[in-house]
Amino acid sequence: IKQELTLTRIGFEANLEIWNNGDHPLENVTVTLRASPFGNASLDATSLFVFGEPELTDITSISGGVIDAKSNAKSTWLIIPLTEAAPMVEIKYDISGVLRYTIEGVWYTQGLASDTITVQPDPQL
Image 1 (cartoon, rainbow, N blue to C red):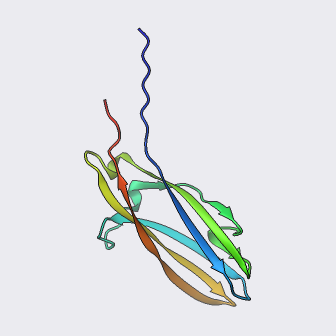
Image 2 (spheres, helix red, strand yellow):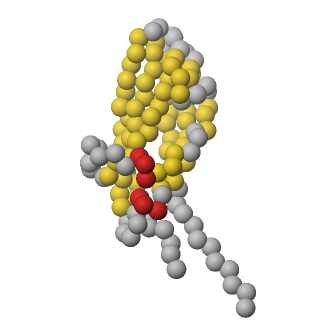
Image 3 (cartoon, rainbow, N blue to C red):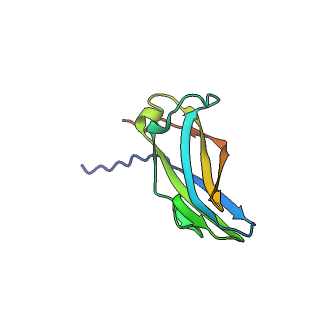
């Protein structure tokens, strides 16, 4: 008897677009993503997720990179929840982050708006 079985895990795609309409490049660009239980930003649940290396467009890095003046940059991450993120029932999480950069040596910090995801339990036999 031949049997086949496929178990899958859901991942989420996160996108960040940054429009630099200014006359100076954004330098030292750093993006930090964070997960927290839905509606409770004071608790950190980031360790329950794997954040893949981002796909970058018109930005050199999200860990000290540069966005040229008059350009638009995009970063796309694959976020994969670990089994512990929803062991038995679906659980909602907020994904948010912080953008930091300099313009002519002056530091700026911008919180990123959160988005809610629903993590389903792993399929089990």
